[in-house]
Image 1 (tube, one colour):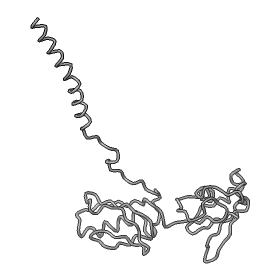
Image 2 (image 1 turned 180 degrees about the vertical axis):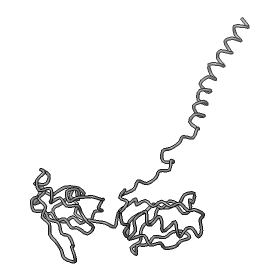
Image 3 (image 1 turned 90 degrees about the vertical axis):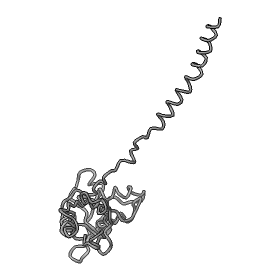
Image 4 (image 1 turned 120 degrees about the vertical axis):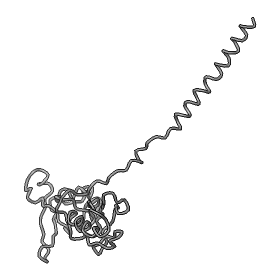
Length: 210
């Protein structure tokens, strides 16, 4: 009888302690640090892959100097066309391609850094804009992507209002100091007719939807 009592007491002790051990294991597992996706550094995607893109005012650049974290940063191009960098102060950026700017920064950094390796990426294009006016959902100024056409520019404005005259759209462009007007019939172009009207946009173009 005494042995049976001892066995029963041991069984009860084991039964009571088992959940506590399970909870302890769960708490240890919960306490393990998890790797968050937000903690993983990500590289900003380029806004353009065109090697001949000319940097302009208000563009945003990602400047990376290999093994020089304090020189690696994202900088806006100021209205005067320059950027600010440690050691170099002001650097002219507007009017240069990303490759040309990287070469310029590399040359100037040689006074301070041994064998600098510089990469310049345009992460936001704000200098080249097209203007959409009239009967569109969201009239205003929109950045131009390389190769953007009139049709693609119109899609940026969210479509037409119910009063839009889609056959009478026109593009205004400054050519040689004079303003030129180019007709654009939306109905024709989307049906594959008169596709030559679908011009590639240039900075400063104005699309008017009457």
